[in-house]
Image (tube, each protein chain N blue to C red):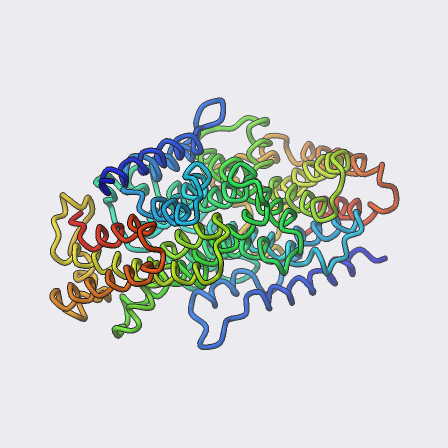
Length: 294
Length: 294
């Protein structure tokens, strides 16, 4: 199997399903509908949905049965981008090579569309169409809410905003990134395990993998920001340093960060070694994330 | 039973339970924790939790078993106030007689705290502590997400923002308010019915009651805004007219609005008549809402 092709194939089925889930009801679409579609549709690698689907596959969950959960997760990711880009937050005007939502529409619409996407994620997860077993649905909701909420992603963003005003040490930056980025990666893998009714010890392995992967992803992102090409990335670069943001590249230097990245990929691989060849796609995902240039 | 005393008693147990649910974990509370507590704690009539608990009581649900769902609903209500007050939305500086959250903290914290409260509501609803049956938990989540989301409350707010720019006719205003205010009232009653495993025909009656009640609540609110005393209400008054907002009082006149209010209370009472004396507290709630002066 060609990894890049598989990633593209899954991104396409995720995009199509999101199209359906975000389709307007009969009648004229409202500006809220349009803004939500703008925020979610039109590309992206769909790494989190891919991780969820591949984690499920590890426990023999067919992608048709993990697709809606994967789309719910992507809605949460997109909501977080929309709100993070707001002027009061990170104040980014460009996202995925297009105007950020609050530029394309306005701030009020961006706030509302983010709220509505977050809410939609829970509507999808709790829908009987997502899984026939309500126990699975309730567990997915519970885990996503914990990952995205005040002890997870939202806390990470709060610490990140604070860090622009105060210096964070290496441990503090790592914790902030584990929350801000890592929490949704952990949910992606956890959700696959929930859908596959995986045993606790297998969940633990997958969790170790997801933690390493989340850190690798963020480190690769920071390296791109420090070295990158704005046109290829589709958003502003070198913003972190300009804003005095705490990043590990700033603390470790570029070479130090690259060494850490390699160690994280090895950690992710080791965590999944007990699964044997079944985990090869997830392991390739870790390598892909570390090596990405855009 | 004295209705006002009962409302106060329930508000107090809701406040205490919210205190516990929003308690910081060990360690220094973050500014996000503090902002969430500021947004939720410290008073309010807790009408929506009261409705949820009383609706449950109609089907013999003890308040100990509806309290957490009631608190989840209040978190969603408070999130909606925090985001609606933002400068980009309704731009209100005062809420419940205190500075709005974005004034007391800052805009970024207000956006994040709102996000985190919305997410926490789903964490609470899907928690095994809320109900032992995961089918009930999943149904609560599904219904709250639909009520609060892009076809419910969020859509109502989007139409409201739009209405500041374009004239709405009476039917349009009624629809906007049914979404913006009515949807959470409907969920309050629906959740009581879900917890009580009510049959479909009983749910339908309760739904009719909630729709009338939501409209009555909004109309009473608009009347207060048109006639009210800023100090007693604890927020700015006559803002709607100043902002050219579409309200039914503007369209019907004060006397017309009062007549409509009386008709809505009668509608709410009729919907619950088949339940007999068991529904007396819910019927008193409708009267209380119509007659409130603050």
